[in-house]
Length: 118
Image (cartoon, rainbow, N blue to C red):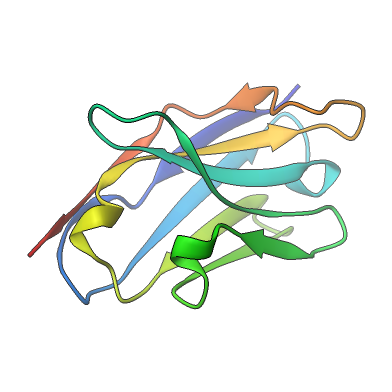
């Protein structure tokens, strides 16, 4: 199984950028579809985007063109580059790993807070 640790969150002004990292241990990130999720106060957790084992990426509509997911196999790390941030992007961001045999994300990090001020 894989262990995931997010980092890189913080406070940023609207229009700014942040890059979140998800460092994995135990297994390679290339063994999974790696997803990013977020949860804002009082709201349900929502899917942000993911990178497949083959390197394909897909995103929820609200972040398309602003967020980019990438993977560095040598560092066993997945990244979420967030540009043109908006106050509505404020949330705790989580990375998660989905094995091929599962329809669910089975492994989760602890989350990192992103706050975007207006």
